[in-house]
Each structure stands twice: as C-alpha cells, then as structure tokens.
Image (tube, rainbow, N blue to C red; front, side, top):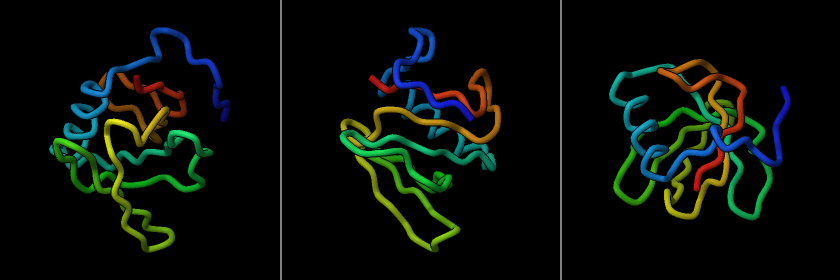
Length: 98
C-alpha cells in the first residue's frame, strides 16, 4: 500500500465532507474501517471502526487492542484511508482533510 505525502487535489476533502462520510458509514452500519494520520503524528498501525460522530469529534474502536479513542474533527485528522470502497471513496487511497 502506497501512502502519499502530497495528495492530489482531487484527494482533498473538507472537514464537513469528512464528517458527513463518517456519519454515513455509521448510519449505513457499513463495515468500513479507517486508518488516519493525526496532526503532528504518524499513521496509525491498525484500522479503526467508526462508532459515533458528533458535531465536534468522533469515537473510534480499535478492536485489535480492545481500545476506544475520541478524536476532534477540527484538528485531529490530517489524512485518512478506508479499507473498503464506500460510495465514491476508494480503499487504500490517502485522502487529505482540510
């Protein structure tokens, strides 16, 4: 899997689009998981299930390590990858959140 440092323009989505995508994944009970690049950090090792999305953040579940994580939508995620196609979003492609 290739993870790009500089995503193409068409691989950039807004925070609102990201939030709506995550809400849609939860609402459709899709078995889609995400990996993400936190602001100032490195890519997560495991994929996470999206449990809940709120106005300010989201709750993720790391089933491999049996942990729950809370992340801010406004400054928590710089890029993300989904593990399966969902709507027009492709798997294993890094999308930048701006």
